[in-house]
Figure 1 (cartoon, rainbow, N blue to C red):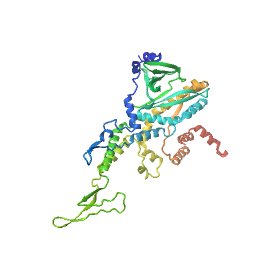
Figure 2: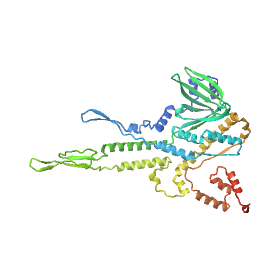
Figure 3: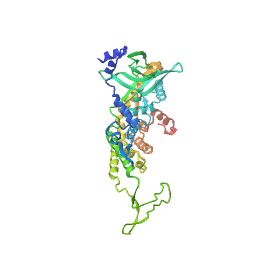
Figure 4: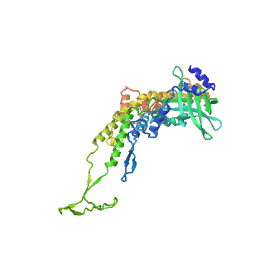
Length: 457
């Protein structure tokens, strides 16, 4: 069934009905829009538990009995950005290390493309979009530079790029990637649809109906798109806690506006209210007499705020602790870190164990994503950029390694590894590898070359 639909699509027979049938994997547009607005625009009118609904404007009477609107205090707090960006930092804060099974001209070309496309920084943006909007994509293309040279370029897609989704066959393999977006022509929005299969990019445009404008090779031997997706935003498990925290802080702000400033209480006749900016403030309470000729004096004093919001403080601390702990996000505020002192590398890792475990849990998917990126780059190089390197791609594979963003206890690690090597329970090569050297073989050669004559084997 799917093959028949795709054959019709590829032959230029796209209709709205056909598009609907091949869009089963497309995410709900309204849901994606809400994710985008909540994360990037601090929109708090998505859920009825948010301050856009819990904090309501009020109509009150002024001194002359006229209606006026009092705007509610609404304070959005970007816990969601803290959670997402911390998660991304623990996964891609440091550049990934790509270790090919062999070093040759092709692997050098892959490294050049990786650097030219700035993929380390793009991966951070891709993952931020995925963790916040639940999807993103990386689209590759081959461009002709300076008239003759072909270069591989790439573009990151997110909610603002338009709609995009994969199309899977009956076995769950992606057989088409669709990207729908709008452009302006003569001041009018025109719908465009690009679709990529293993060899061709199909470009449709819609005025009254869909028209296939071009059907060209995209210069890769596989679909040149990597699609990143997850079911819910990274902060989904704690979104209600965040809503309650923002409501609590907003209500506290409103309460402080009403009663936080000192309240002056006067008794009897008090005159001469001083200017707010004057020094040496003084009130005049003139002497008077009641009907029995007893002296009467005016009085003025500031009323203290006797109802300190202890329960509010307790609730906010509880909510904050739950938000950080349940999302495995470390609270790296200055107050929490100022007394940390000099801790060992092991103790430091234990402090951030939640975030480390979450990064480890995502490592499998992240490694697969990166290997797909490498495979697309290799297919572009060997198909269009430098076809003579096709032979070098046979049997080539990459090991992807991730490194921690936490400060390392280098002295302690070196001592431990030295003890292990001298105790003959670990090889020198393994020890160098554990120190995080990108090229262990080269490091071993340097060590051998620097040996003194009397240190020979």
